[in-house]
Every structure is written in structure tokens, then in C-alpha cells.
Length: 80
Image (cartoon, rainbow, N blue to C red; front, side, top):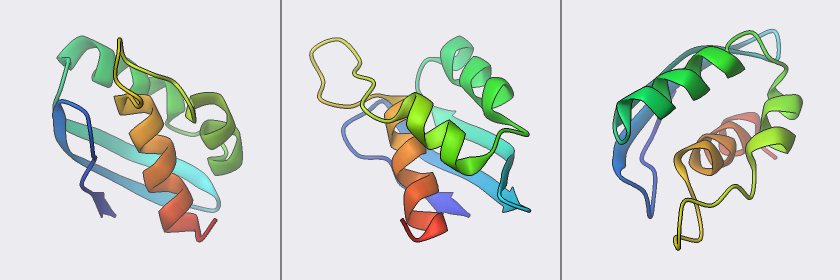
């Protein structure tokens, strides 16, 4: 799957969902250390758990963040 985030520094997020688990997450752009950390932490996690942990996280004064955008991407991919 490929998702174009809105309102954050990263330009693209790619990922896979297999057996309702998050796989192969990669952020393009954004804060490299943070996005790599988020990607590694959610890999293997249940989609619903990942969404509930990341949804609503804000970055500074922005109304969203890269983790929140990943949650939105997962929701869209899972039809939620």
C-alpha cells in the first residue's frame, strides 16, 4: 500500500498488511530517526492496536503527525 500523508513533513508512507499485522513500513521524508523508530515499533503489530496507539498524536503545533498519518493510512487500507 502507498499513502500520501497530509500536513506533515513526510511525502509518502508505504506498508503492507498481512494477516491483520503491519509489515514493511517505510516513510519517505520527515524526521528520519523518528519515522524509522515508528516503523520498527509498529512492524508485526496488530493493525487495530497500531491505530489506537498512534491516532491523534500531534507534532508541535500541527494537528497531525507522521504516526497519526500512518494510523490514517492503516484505517483507510483496512476499510475502517
